[in-house]
Image 1 (cartoon, rainbow, N blue to C red):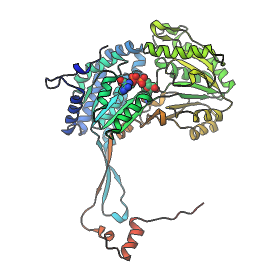
Image 2 (image 1 turned 90 degrees about the horizontal axis):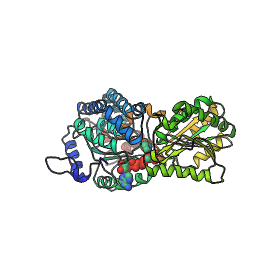
Image 3 (image 1 turned 180 degrees about the horizontal axis):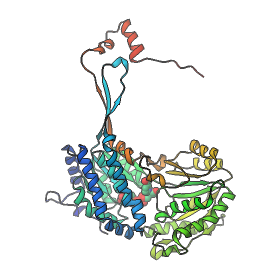
Image 4 (image 1 turned 30 degrees about the horizontal axis):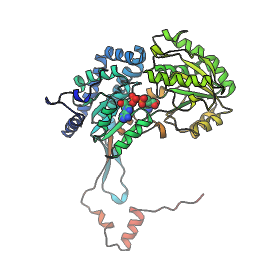
Amino acid sequence: MNAQHLDTLPQINGAPSTVETTVDQARQLFNTGVTKPLAWRLQQLKAMNSMVLDHTEDFTAALAADLGKHPSEAWLTEIGFITAEIAHTVKHLEAWLTPRKVSVPLALQPAQASTVLEPLGVVLVIAPWNYPLQLLLAPMVGALAAGNTVVGKPSELAPATSAALARWVPDYLDGAVTIIEGGVPETTELLEQRFDHIFYTGNGRVGRIVMAAAAKNLTPVTLELGGKSPVYIDDTVDMITAARRIAWGKFMNAGQTCVAPDYVLGTDSALAKLAKELPLAIEELYGTEPAHSLAYGRIINDDAFARITGLLAKDLADDAGSALVSGGRTDAATRYIEPTVIHVDAQAHLMQDEIFGPVLPLVTVASAQEAINFIQGRDKPLAVYVFSDDKGVRQDFTEQTTSGALNFGVPAAHLFVPGLPFGGVGESGIGSYHGHHSIETFSHRKAILDKPLAPDTMSLIYPPFGSLKKQVIKRFVAPAKKFRKD
Ligand code: NAD
């Protein structure tokens, strides 16, 4: 592994660095005020853009080494994703940073009120392994655009990408971003430092560790977590296109996507049609032998391979009504799991936790309402995907389910709409980012009130209170309205 451990951290002023001094340096740079002007922020974003474009080949090779990612998928979901996020931010940043006027009540006039965005300080970004480039750099786009300095901790489980980031970031973002490689000990030491915001993407167990550490310094957190994102499908849709889209969202990155459809709910007849179309859709995407398709990824490591294949084997061994629809072949040596579709019931092993692999369970429900009840009875998902042309069904899902995102007709694609906030709710996360939502996440919106000293209209509310002042206070400064009960 290429991890840069504590004893070999970058040299700062000739002395061996520690996590503590790295954070300290980031704070010192922030405290100089150099990060605040728009020009500095744009310069960092453009430098990050150059970094990923100048070294696209290196990053692509690293993503292939870590996850068997095809170069086109690496561009779509990692490298090009970042350049698009940067382009959108560069285009709009000045407008997003413009102070917003706020109206002042009559009783306080003359005065002017506004809000301004100010950077928070030093931001820690902790990334997972499944989109190891995107999930480290996309939050950094927001953090730098908001005028912060950043310490980035890539995932040790994607060592090639982690090493590529450590290799190139100092050349392009020196000081603005420092990469700390390593695993749990390094992250633990990082979490002992005081940051002004911690942005964590990964699982809920570590999310709780991050939040507990942040609480010690009252540091705000964004937690981008996972969970089981359901699909509901009925008979009203074009099943061929629906199957293709579900297969695309599910089997991209070999199912290791936080917003991948985790399982599908549908009536018997809808699932029967879908079960017929899904194997054809999978064949269209990856051929008859996905093991030979360059477009199909691999499982990140042996533990994850054992976990996913174990769940599949248990459900197939149980007499609980599980039935394989397609796929199911695996190869431990190459950590290959064939795109797999399986009928299960709600008690199946596959239905307990996020699958995070290329196995798609189909679960029968009697109706859309039963699907809604099923979703409501579980943790709030990162995304809910509905395939239905029935207006009433679409409305019911909108009103009766809660999730980070609700997509009709397509899984995962909301990530590519930069104006939409990306984040979870409840067990699937806290806070959101992308586009201008990132700027709000990584800034403090400061309230500013400016009231001239003359004329001193405030004297109308100073003690001592006579009947005139009482009237003024009650009528104009702090009025009360009675609402009719209807
Ligand atoms: P991971 O194992 O790479 O962990 C993420 C980060 O946490 C790593 O940098 C790691 O060093 C650190 N970490 C691990 N254990 C730690 C500990 N005990 N203390 C401190 N830090 C620790 O990634 P993962 O958690 O396996 O990622 C998969 C999960 O992430 C899935 O649940 C997935 O749904 C979720 N995810 C969410 C999003 C999102 O945007 N919401 C995106 C991708 C993945």
